[in-house]
Length: 150
Image (cartoon, rainbow, N blue to C red; front, side, top):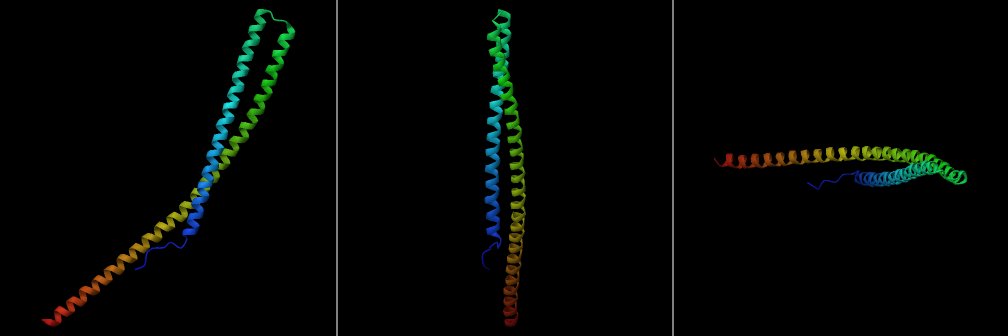
């Protein structure tokens, strides 16, 4: 009996490559998400430090002009934080979309993989059945010869 060949092997290989591509895209999106989270955390830390510095300057009785400069800086940080939160939401949506694409690609590959497994199982079952039939024929032929000689 000839060797097992899966007729949909090219489709299976394509879906595997597509899944790998989607996995890479998802991993890149997760990396980008982590970078954006680090950026926003740095901005929030700068905001906390600057607010503490303003409090310290107030206690020291610093000149209003100096305080105005610090207030303007803190307001700028607030805007940057708001922008970064928007960016973070967008990147989070991107990561979720990439996750969905990966899940879909994985499902599609698994469908073909299950069909391949069933095809192989069917092939093996047929091979065993043929072997058994050939073995039965050999036994019958031997028995027939031995029965004739008696």
